[in-house]
Image 1 (spheres, rainbow, N blue to C red):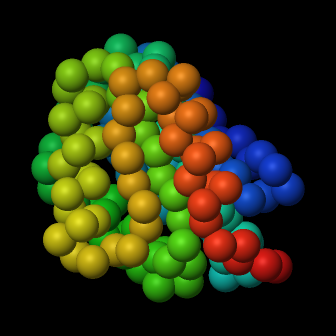
Image 2: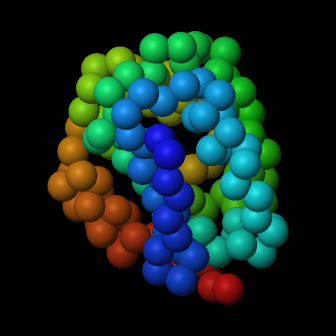
Length: 138
């Protein structure tokens, strides 16, 4: 499967690992298909999209990125305090990730987001950001 979902740290961390040739349908499905209760969504403190092993995302369009941003906007109404990191070493995926990030910014989604080229950068950013973030409680 090109997209795997993994919950970490008792459900406070969510990692999506994308591999190989990822289609727009698979990408959107991985975002909209993760159905969780509001309680589960509130528990999440960080999400990582790991695109390190993506070979292509040729059919992903700006409209697809807008659709994902709309889903994220609704999710942010349930939990506005999420750190979201994208690992995007390939230029095309990096560009799509930055487009998504800018759409969240202009629609006032309060999540703290960042796009990186490596896992090491994400690990450092998450460690620092989680230490600085207020505890959400349960």
